Length: 93
Image (cartoon, rainbow, N blue to C red; front, side):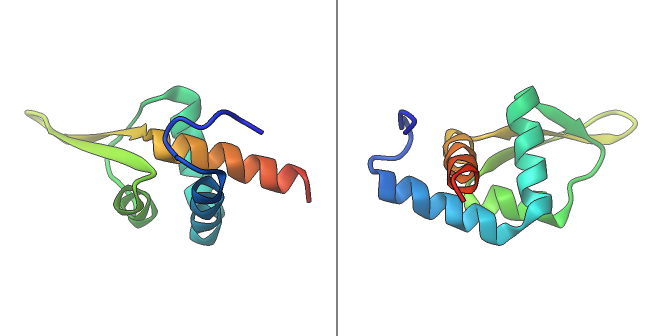
């Protein structure tokens, strides 16, 4: 098992992994990219990314530039640990 930093119990981490799984493959792909790069920048944010943010898996910060708007997307510790647990669960299926 992995060390938990955000979650107090393994059961909480597993519940978060199941919540992530229910969001679908697109959500897991966005979170995975955020974890891999630690920050990604986009011109727009998808509804899937907004859902990830509302569930606590990522943070989205909006920047209004002189000529255009951009968004920085970062993983939360909650999201990183949920993804780790999700990978463990699915690698043992």
